[in-house]
Structures are given as structure tokens and as C-alpha cells.
Amino acid sequence: MLFKTDSELALELGKRVRVYRIRKSVSQKTLAEKAGVHVNTLRTLERCGEVKLSSFISIMRALGERGVLERILEGPPPRDLYTESPADSPLPQRVREKRQ
Image 1 (cartoon, rainbow, N blue to C red):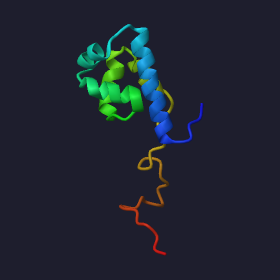
Image 2 (image 1 turned 180 degrees about the vertical axis):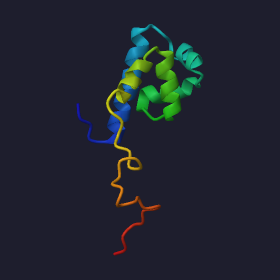
Image 3 (image 1 turned 90 degrees about the horizontal axis):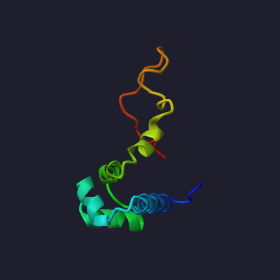
């Protein structure tokens, strides 16, 4: 499933949270209390997918779906630029934009 924009992806995440909640027969108020977020935060997530990452994680944990998030981390970690750089070319201390 490909999403054209980040907003479409966020909206789909919110929809899926709503599906998880409804399948577990939990009200928005109850889930929000269990997750430690305001009910408006949960409503915003379900409606437009726009909440802080920490709130999203708390809601998924309260739904018992933390494993869904952990599966993202199952693969090998991204290449570490600090440990995998060639010995003869040290990493720069900063990166600057090229002048035009």
C-alpha cells in the first residue's frame, strides 16, 4: 500500500487505531484514560492522524498493540555512519549546504 503524501499515511494510521479500538469494544474516553492522553488527542488521531509520536505510542500500548510498532524495528538497524565509515576518511564534524 503506497501513500502519495505523509498526510495520507497519517490519516490511515488514525483509521487503523480506530479499527483496533472498536474491535476491542473500547470507548474513546476509556482508551484515552488508559493511555494517559486527553480524549481530544485520541479523537484527533482517529480523525486526521496528527498527534505527537509519544501519544501515538501510548495509545497503541493501551490497545495492546505495541507489537505492531515493534515489528518496525525487527529488521537490521540502519547503517551507522560513525562505526562503518572507512578508516582513511574521517567523518566531517558538520555538513554545510553547497553555495550556488
